[in-house]
Image (cartoon, rainbow, N blue to C red; front, side, top):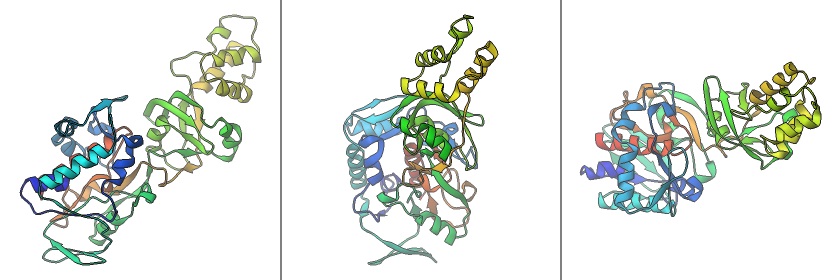
Length: 371
């Protein structure tokens, strides 16, 4: 996007990619259909040490702008849920669109470029295994540490550190959480079970699906809340949003027993989860007070994860180049004129559902207009 925008302004642009194919992370996104933006994209859907930093770029290149590009290339798409837009066909359509836009803008793209060093004197010198490239402007769009098997590296952080730029500590985000041993013993065999929950950390909550795995918890609700979770902390899970499972038992004085409690849970929860929850968390007695306490536990299940599945399974990397080092309007370094950092390399991380792609498009456009 940065190359396209700069090329359309008549700039001479060279894209260096260390991969053997362009857009590899685009191609695997959204189950191969590329969740390319979200129509509800606003700055409050992003995490950063400076929560206001994202506003400028997002306001100047909006989801509507990217949708117009998609429609101009006659790529059919649909809204899945919560404003998420996907290709009807394949993520290859988005890569082909961007490649075509690069060609039209006169942009050169070179693949298999192993960058060995970056220097700066009168201009930037990017050294590869084969040759050197010189330019007045260098835009670093190399992403974070997520999905190393796709070629993710720490190059952006190394370049930033070389030029004295501060970095917010990177960490996996939008990532499954793993069980503590005692929780694994209780729940690991529920692998594959999915249910709608509200997952909360602090004042932030997400109502979406939770998925039990053999290693821990996943699904959209957990991926979302993982970005806010810190090691050693807990998350709170409402397993039955807006439901009162024990209300039928509390309404009748007789017939209160373990079997009736299981039956009440089965009316709300998936059967295997209802059976397991009843076995592990039956009330201490059958008074209304005890039933209300059991009800409260169902809506405030405290889980303290052992950790995350790490960068291998993380959809994005939180943290990165400090926003204090960059212009919010252009993404240019405040210390090093001509040096830009965009996309996931920067300390701005979107929610699940197309937000991180929109951040990439918006910051690419911002830098492309400025270089």
